[in-house]
Length: 463
Image (cartoon, rainbow, N blue to C red; front, side):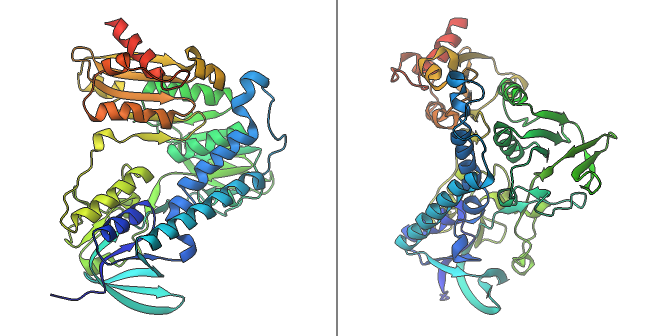
């Protein structure tokens, strides 16, 4: 038997890397994580992605007072002039605490941390460069969990001040009055809704004719209606061909393929993500990255090189922190002979726009395409006592179920706490339950959870 330094080395300390490392450690394996710096433990998720963006959302909701305007007037705000520093103060506090939590978890689970930039030498050896000093370590297995970075374009000259990507957004000094956002994916929509809530005039550009096509159309139309109420302008099916800073006007100009030119104070570019695999020297282990640096894996999260696994955003869809955690855990199990698989049909999506969206299972468009006979049941937040207390008049929960077997097929929510209450539907969907479960269950009152009962009765009444 060959003696290696470690049973597993994980490259990257984001959600997938953390959970993969801890899983292997709990199986009594010797594990190390390679991260560029000890201070960036947690990866993009903690330092520039999920945690900062969702904390920004909470800060916006609190300081803007948007959730209270139903009661106290459209101009109500906790603070009249909100500055970028007001928002980043909360973000810095949460990021610091979350970093400390992750560092403590790794220590408690006996996961060693190696600081530096990793590259493969062969299938069992890594070369690690740290402040000009190179060293080598060996392992029986590797888990690549290096995550992604914002994709760039030659047409978009990023300067980090006037024209920036999502990683640079939190470093701008002032909240702009007018912002052009190129790319209406999840990230673009989340930031657009947050800034629109602060009174920023948003123009959202996207080359696609429709937004987030995986989201139920009724839910998406509801979101777009509410965002338009905040003054947001959507320009879909429009491609940006050139972008730059107009010195004469002192503004950013985005030229469109259709001949239009859009002006704004600043521009946020959020068109996709690029896998951080270009520095790993993958050819040394017989691997090659696919489009945008992504890696291909099987259902065990194993690459075509048997002792090398990959998980998280670097393998592409669905690229959620929640699914990345589970992917890392499953990879950690499988590489050491513990069988584990995912249940992809039941993972929930959370889109943290204002208002937020969450869903699990099929949407109406998918069921129609698959020729599945279904019925809908809807509960509107305005009909719920809790919805009235929260001041959410536009929220709704929709159940989709088979109109013969009554089996639950999908749950779609838009409104306050959508990403929390969707898990009730997820549990019933996971175990093949029917819509009758919601009809026959007693929910706390007043809660948003009772929307399930209202929606179930609505749907069953239609039958």
